[in-house]
Structures are given as C-alpha cells and as structure tokens.
Length: 122
Image 1 (cartoon, rainbow, N blue to C red):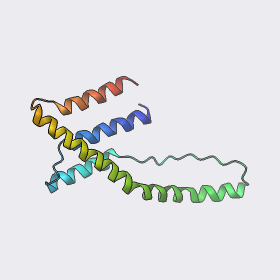
Image 2 (image 1 turned 30 degrees about the horizontal axis):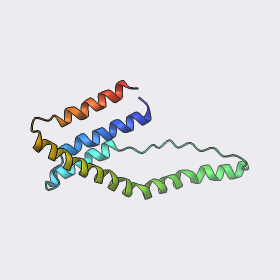
Image 3 (image 1 turned 180 degrees about the vertical axis):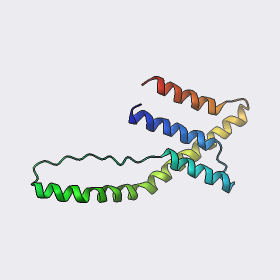
Image 4 (image 1 turned 45 degrees about the vertical axis):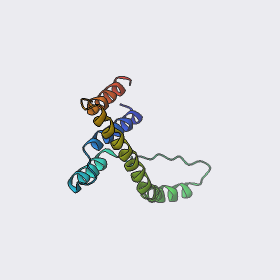
C-alpha cells in the first residue's frame, strides 16, 4: 500500500472512530482522542539533499536538520489536530442527521466499503 493510500485509509479510520464519539461523554471523547493518536502519523524519515555546500556546511546541516524538522512538526501539529477535529465534528453532525433520516443506514459499512474500494484500486 502506498503512503498516500495509507493516509487516506487512516482518514477513513478517523471518520469511523468519529461515529462513536459523543462530545458530551468524557469517556467517549477520551476514546476518540486516543483513536486519533493511533491513526494520525508523522513520518520520521525526511530526506534532504544538499548541493553546492562544503562538506563542513553539509555536516552542520545534517546535525541541526532533525531538530528543525521536529520544531516545524510541533508548530504545525496543533493546527493539524484542530483541522482534523473540525472535519470529524462536521462529519459526525452529517452522519447523525443521516442516521435520523435513514435509521437503517449502515454508515460504518459505507466507510468500510470505501476503504476496501481504495485498497482494491492500488
């Protein structure tokens, strides 16, 4: 499975976890947050090439680059988390409304079918 497909699959996993999230239930909210932590991933493998630099400059860059990347990720993570939570809250609202209008709707089944179709498409 490609990294792109895996991230889309993780997105579907987040939506599936959202279905059981009840914002007024602290235990359900905690379970949802734990699901997000398990499903969201940040790659450690970052590849950067240097050209036109002296060996000394390359050595210094290789030494400080991991710290810079970590700081960038930490700076972006709160916004990314809020974005995902906002999308999940919107999805939950739509899914709840759909479930009220169509009580027999199998929303989890729809998400599972989407994940299977995505996996077949690879």
